Image (cartoon, rainbow over all chains, first blue to last red; front, side, top):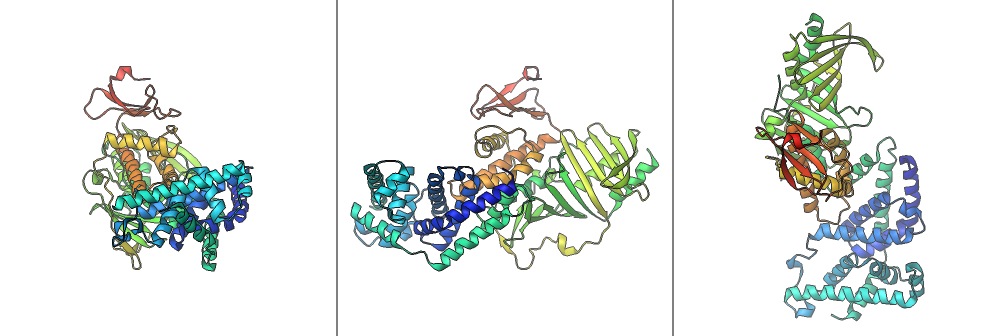
Length: 170
Length: 390
């Protein structure tokens, strides 16, 4: 595909997904600077995977692009180990309450990007896009029970991550 | 922490509305990206590179290309007619020289460097990095690298071995010409049209260098110089001699409105290990697991924007991306030492990273009778010259 044709295709795909990306990336970042960076990565990801986004499997790729963009933007902000600076974690509460609501929300946003691919997609569809399980099952090409299982496992993974973070502070 | 709590957080995140200004931010980011794509005459890597630069995701590779362009291992400088002497006079005597130069023979798509040379100062811009300008002061061994888009400046110290390897191309050409001007090995090539202009050509041959100059037959002003030095080929063209140049263009002071940034670049003492890391990055990051078709300065210059493109989306912190970029460049600087005078060969095209049987690169260190051979899995062996592939 020559550059001109590629740019044209990109523009069509961008127009199709820009609202989705804006909504999902905003909810995953909750911060304008981080959002802009994630959006840039997502656009780069779209450009680099333009052939894949022009196929029937485009739906799966766009979720992957969004989640990777989110993950990369968060990593750049926080650092290699993916942990918040200690100063951001309050120490005057019991172990389970060391992380305040804002911090917990930030960690959940970030960790969604680190979930296994299908769990990540499932959680985005269920909570960020508020799809019902039948819809999720159709998009993930699985049964409704399978969709519920992906969501449930994702929540379990997030719980483990948060628990590990609290444990570090003990 | 229970699962209900996490579900509650997820529901809260999901119920957030996207503020209007965030939609505008998304539109602007998309437009910026689309705008760079509309520059259809530029190759894809350039487009992405410009976007990456604007997005400030990483500036490392930009600095890297300046470094690659600035340093050349001309450490081994080897060593008529009246008409030939006339032709070379402007190059030898001009107070200022403005010209373009291209490393390699790919004039169509290779990066073009535009140089303004005033004494020991050079102002350099590179066609595939339109936002980057470097001013090189050969006397104080410093580079002032300017990002004209972000309005940032950084000083890069090139003292030590790098200073030795850094050359003013015109000065280099002058030295070659001085050496060849009385040589009996100057051939007149006759007349030829170059870019619609009638020229007369001369070729001078030294033991390790060959210079071809095409000049205006009436004024004797050079129009094009081709210089071959062992495996290195350089084209210089679009000359302007003794054109007035404002002092500010070659000033080493940070221009008004620019922010000076601290540099952590350390390009001194590039080693074989750096080169090995560089090969690993070529294969692993740039080429999806295979070694490239060719390496060397010409190819590095072309691939540096790709390095930016490939590094930017990696799921790594910026610091690690910078380290990767630094390693890549240090390795290429090691190669430059051999490029213009040493014995080396690259045979890695199509070899997979990890293939312990295939030879990728070999070179003969100074004063060594054997060659150091780097294999596809990046282990190194000492090999006698007669055991190497012909």
